[in-house]
Image 1 (cartoon, rainbow, N blue to C red):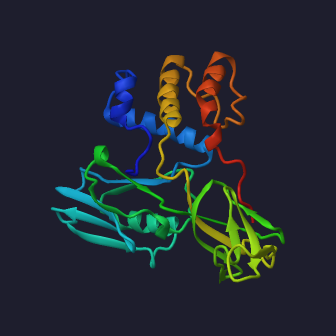
Image 2: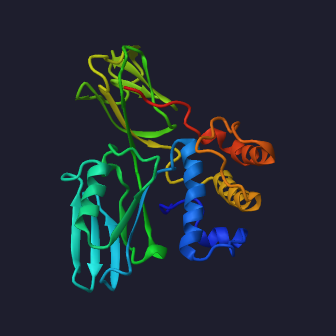
Length: 289
């Protein structure tokens, strides 16, 4: 499934009258705000990490973005800035370092990192994608995570909880030591159980406890079940909230939603009704140090 937000501007315009906006850029900014608010409440963005495009006003005739297993590769065609610009994950290990380097290039690239993207998330966790047209705001490209890293203290407990349902585990490090699945731990939907294999196979095991030697001494990299998914309830909520926002003429009443309870009047009831089907996709807690 392609990496993108759940609702494109073209899809929104099919469902909602956006004639009150003066430009496509204003329409897109409106959609981004609604989508971003939903992501903020859920605590994640279904894997979407950042959006990037090349400004058509900066000398060039074309531009593409590619993500390989080793780097983000930006290509500019035409003009004084023409060239290929690779940003390797080895050199720019975090999202923060990667974005800072692209912005420092100063050749017309515009990058927006979603609020739900931790700046210290490894850049190497970005999903591979083929070279894609990124010339102009209407051709902006979304970069998504293929996997997710969470670190926390083992706390000398049997279970280590993660924030999203696990599809598969890529790696688990405890105090810098790589553990083997079904030998050092077992994976459930939202947690990893520490154990030691005492027989010749994965069916022979005994409970053990995660180390608590230092803060953030356990790091789990995994593929969440939610990544690259666009459930219908998410699409419906964003479209419905967009219509609600336009009809209300009042906009959002606050920067925090809490449990959808802080708003007043019918606007709050309608918002809650649209958001409630997404409760199963909401992070229940946050990994701590």
